[in-house]
Image (cartoon, rainbow, N blue to C red; front, side):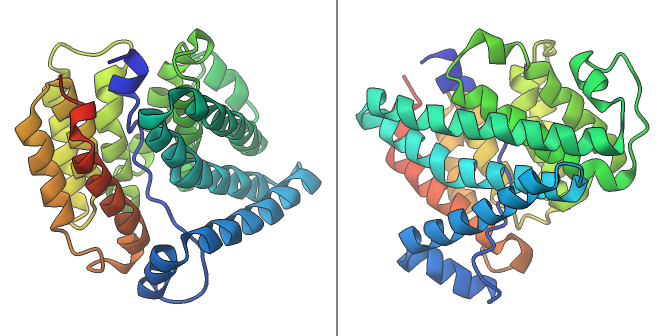
Amino acid sequence: MSFTNKYFIYLLPFVLHYNISCTSPRVNVLALSYTPNFSKKLYLSNLKKIENKAIKNPLDSSFLFNASKELTIFSYGYTMEEAAKLKISDYNASKSIYLKAHNDFVRSIDYINSSLDLEYPDYKTWIVENNQKKLNFKKASAEKLYWAAGAYAGAIESSNGDPKWLIQLPKIGQLLESGMKLDPEWNYGSFYTAMISYTLIRHDAKNNKFDLAKEFFEKAVDISKGEDLSPYISYAVNIAVSEQDRNEFTNMLYKALNIDIYANPELTLSNYMNRKKANWLLDNIEEYFY
């Protein structure tokens, strides 16, 4: 199992807010279930409009942020999923899809970095110099820092081990840790969920990194009241796979599948997508244990 296969399989389990329509989460789940291609085309059409606004308004921080966030969501929710599944049966064909995702993530990074730099003029220096320059972020910026980390994570994962991108791994931690200080419980513990995987792959990982990752898992589950599938899936594909604990892998995925995806309407769509991922992982379990 290669470095990228083993550690970037589910680098940052983002809460995917699919803006399919103005209807209820249940209706949107039905739309994704029965008309996935139409839903994808609708999302892509909306994404193009959002990107056009950002391109036409390069000094509008909110337009740039929205473009980055939606592009990251689309790339993770559709392009990366397609590439990961195809990789098992046709590795060469999957490479072109990963390349498309990579280019989109790089574009997303440009949008989010420009957005943050408009609000914090020293941001680009801060992100390049790896925290040598202190920035006083506002609490409201926690969301932007999270999605900036997501864009970098996507670019690294989709680069398939390119050293140029692997050396940028510390930026993910820099962004996540800064955002976590601002609002640790943001979005049902999303920072803690993201830290499960990052704790295991960071360049300065601690000797007790697995214990730390499990602590982040517990915090994420606690904050989300056990209604979010993401922490369980992240535990399975990061901790269980790294420890080659097949039983824990299946245990966590079955726990995820037993969660009522409608219990929290704000998590319904992301839980639906993660439920599909959990089933796919169980169906392809032999790919992760040797």
